[in-house]
Image (cartoon, rainbow, N blue to C red; front, top):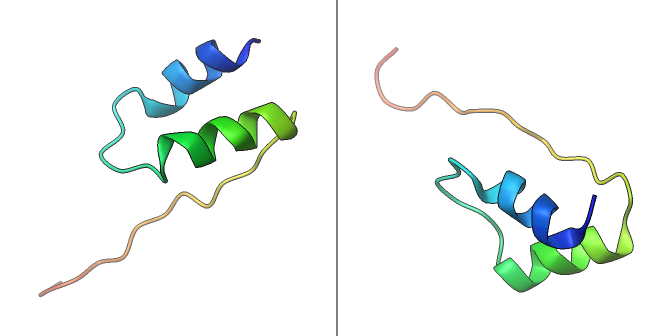
Length: 45
């Protein structure tokens, strides 16, 4: 998959990302990047 397609998929429906240039560099230099995807409950639970 080319870098542009990976960028499109990674940023689709995302509220926040690292800088676009940092994400692009990651995709250009790493074939299988990993990410932590989680949440932090805040406020009253």
